[in-house]
Image 1: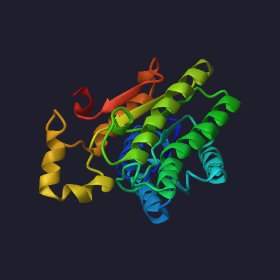
Image 2: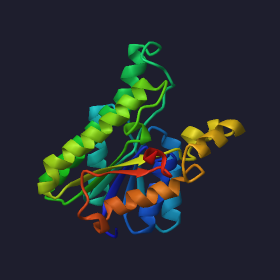
Image 3: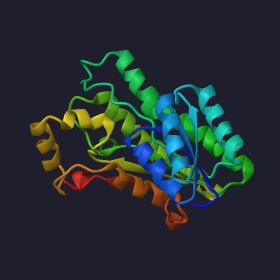
Length: 249
């Protein structure tokens, strides 16, 4: 990954930070984008202290102007943009369609789906304008492959990311731009770790994965890094499950 600039949204979260650290350790210049400026600045500092190259830009992925500015920041800071991990996402509560109001629905789709749309739009725009053969990975979820109870907005958004990934891959593969997605199962990240403190819940989640445990963020990061690398040069439009076998059942 030496000499490549990679953008990671949701960069201070479990999957984002693990991917940023891993890619930086392999020579990439990493731009960390997140709403949490303190955490983002600290992560970039840590990566630089470990000998990597990293910078932070505060970004709300639901704001088109900020997304456009995020891409410009990456280009201005490191001279280009060669890849991206569109990972920013939220889980704003578990509700059925009768329980969910419009605000709940719109917030979930704004971050988890429209945010990915906006990132793809401006990342690809830059890559085409500069003739860059780029690689992009979007975060969906096992929720993008199956139905789950009490999560109508989240399930819908994550299914949308799968469709967005496949459609965009078809549109731009001939331009040398690969677009793939990862579908993580239950992973021990800040989004889930509080719930996993409940021993009964943690055991239930582990049992739901044939491998018998929850995942760890570095395990997903390895898959993302592979998809961003030339080792995956013939892979586009793929939605790769990293889920301990959850979706095979």
